[in-house]
Structures are given as structure tokens and as C-alpha cells.
Amino acid sequence: MAKMNFEPPSDYYDERVAGIDEKICELVKERKERAEGNPGFPMQIRINEWAQKYDFNAMFLNSIFSTLYFEEMHGSDIEPENFIKNVSVMRTKEANDGFYSILWMRQFENASVVYLNVSMTEEGRMKFHTLSITGTDEEFNCRSEGGGGSDGNLTYTYVVTPALSEDISRYQFIINESEVPLKKDGSTEIVI
Image (cartoon, rainbow, N blue to C red; front, side, top):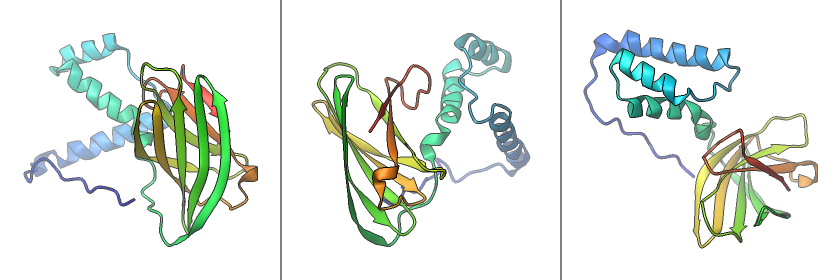
């Protein structure tokens, strides 16, 4: 489960821009706070205007705003430590031409690792899935560790913090399914 280390594309850094880079971080934080965590995505016409005004390529600006939009994909930095045991979950739901299942999770002292399986009966466009968990007053961070599969069968791994209780009957596992990663509007919610 260890995260890959990021390797900068260059060893060179012009210290004269450090203050500007810090200001960029400050502005990104202000943007997030002002939008209450949901800034959306600028319309393409606005991005094109900014690209022309500030002499950037529009695709470059799309890339920046995509990175900002998908910030939650990076989630918590907490890595599971000190494995305790495997816990049977045995939750399934058939919906939207698919079969969704969470059969088990791994318990660690500081986190749980949940495995989501999706079997699609409909061929066509690939769908993306995120997980959230409700059912108690506690808030859970569900960080995707990726997934994979073929022929309509997908498996995703999520690191959940804080660790879930072994009494999983009190939780609802909510799968958000969309055709665009992490899309909030226009997505389908499946509760198991």
C-alpha cells in the first residue's frame, strides 16, 4: 500500500520564484475555502479567455484546473499500519446493469482497507467509481488506491480512515458511479 514517491522532473529550481509559488499555494487554499470545497470547473470559454489574456495554452490551463478539481483523489496521507485481521462484509447490490459487492475488508490499527468489486453486464463506456461511508456521526476519508480489471469486471481498493468498527452493520457503503472520474453532478449513487 505504500505510496509512490514523487520525483520532480528537474533538480533545478529558481529560488527567485519561491514567493510566487507560495502565493499560488495561498490562492489555491483561498479558492477552496471561498467555494466551500466545491469550486467546480471553469467553463471552456472562460479558460480560452484566460489563455489568451495571460499567454497560456488552453490545454495547459485545463490541466491545472483538472488537477485542482481532482484534489480529493489524493486523499489522506495515512498508510495502514499493524494489520489486525480480515473482516467479512458480504454486501451486494444489483443496479444499473451492474453487480456491486464489498465482500471483505482488512483491519489495521489506524485504517481499514475496503475492496469493491463491480461487474458490469452492459458493454460500452468505462465507468468510474468512488466510495463514501455513512451511518455514524463519524466522517470517513475513503482514498482510492486504484483498481483494475477487464471484460466488465473491476476491483477497487480504498484506504478508509479512521478505521471502521468490526460491527459493519451500522455503515452504509455508497458507491458513486460516473463516466468522468470524481464527477459530482450527473453521477449515479448505489447504496449497499
